Length: 66
Image (cartoon, rainbow, N blue to C red; front, top):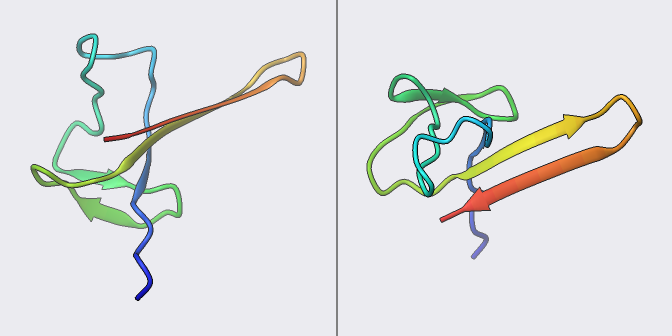
C-alpha cells in the first residue's frame, strides 16, 4: 500500500506568528507547490517549505513537517 505524499505549501519562515507557529495561508485555502489548491483543516498534515536563491548562487531549502 503506497502512502500519498503530503501537500507541500510554500511559506516564509521569516514571518512566523510565534516561536513555533507558521502561517500557512490567510484563509482556509492554500496553493500547493504543484499548483493544486487544497482546503486546510485542523489536524491536517502538510510540509511547509521555503526555497531561496541568493545573488551569489547559494540556494537554501528549508522544510518543516509536524
